[in-house]
Each structure stands twice: as structure tokens, then as C-alpha cells.
Length: 210
Length: 83
Image (tube, rainbow over all chains, first blue to last red):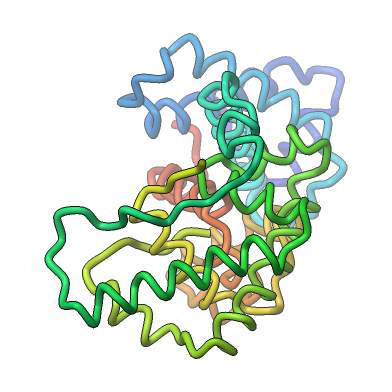
């Protein structure tokens, strides 16, 4: 298989003899996806081949978007990764509705936190206070759409899946959530909660999540 | 009544307090993610060169997952070769 630079890829994929270039592209994408996802029980080899083919079609459909600011192969693999992960997320969440995930009345319960952990009375009180503050802010400071999206995110649903159920784009949903987080941050800080204070309260717990 | 996993709550509070106001969003991040990944692959300070992308990846776990996957795959193809 020939090595191609960016110009050669674009030329060969659009030229009259583009079949070989397309096969080479599919092969490249498949190899990369297979190497990463080979141990993923959710995907068989045949699935990966289908995903590589679908991704290659997306690459071809968006060829005019390639600006040559990176390697063509990097740009194409970016599309393939996005497509594969999106499909995996869709499959994982296809049976889950927003109502099922967050409940029709969106009542929150941050109670029964950290069972089994031994906390000082001060720490336990502080945690309860933080969680009560957060509950109140989510209920009262966000719009209904923000609250729905926020709770769905809290339930682990990926952005693309929430967006689909709320009939919006992932980008628009992200901005909705970002505005919600900015508002909640301002309110939490106003209530006296800093990152340092929260980190100390939950030392050895959790990692960053968006 | 919606109940939450403890870890997710902690992550939530941290993510709220770590939120930076200026965030370009998922679409803008995706548009330039290939450039950002190549900076990483070449050992450059990608976060410094493209701070808005870094901010978004810090804020958005979905995009971060795609970035980490893309980086892991391409680390096996340092010169972008097919073989």
C-alpha cells in the first residue's frame, strides 16, 4: 500500500481510480480502531469493520472540510473515533428514556450519602449542608431545560444521547449545561463553597467529570 | 426520586467549581482536535498552544474520552503510516 501525503490522499480519494484509496483508508481506520477496541466486549471484529467503512464514508462526505492543518490520517481517524464512540454510546443508552433516568418529577435526593464511611460530626454536617445547598440550587436556580439536562448528565447519560432526546444538537446542549454550571458555580461560591473547601471535605473521593 | 452515585456527586461539585467561563463548546473543539492531538504526539505543550481546547477537554468528559482514544490510537502510528 502506498504512503500518501495529504495532497496525495485528497487527490486519490477524489480521482477516477479512487477505489484503492478508499480501501486503503478503510484499512487504516479499521487497523486503528481494532487495535484500540479489540478487548472491548461490546464490539466484534465485524462491527469494527462496519464502523471503519461508515467512518470512511463520513470522511469522503466531508473531504472539503479538511484544511491540511494536520495529517490527513489524523483528521480521518478523528472522524472514525467520534463515529465509533457515538455508536457505542447510542447502543448503551438506547433503552433509556430521560423520564426513566431522572424521574418524571425530578425530585432529588442526595441523602444516604457515603454509607460505610466514618466521618467526624463536623465533616458529616458540612457534607449534608453542601448537598442541601446543591439540591436547592439545582431546583431553584436553573431553567427547566437546564435542570433536565443536568440531571440526565448526573445520571451518566452522554451529551449526544441527551441532546437527541431533547431534540437539540450536542453543541447547543453543551452550552446550555455550561451556562448552568457557571450559574451554579457563582451561587456555590456566594454560599461560601470553594474548590479547596470541597476537596478537603471529600479527600480521596472521585475524579473530574464534565 | 432520583438518587445518585456518590462518586458522580463529588465529580459534579468539583466540575461546577472548576468551570471556566470561556468554553468554546464541543463543535469548536472537535474541529481542531486533530491539531491538538498532533501537538501532543510531537511532545509539544498542546494546552499552552491551544488553551481553549484544553479548557473544553477539562470541562467535557465526552470530548475528553474521544481525545484520549484518538491519542492512544495514533501513538501506534507515529508517522501516520498504514503498515
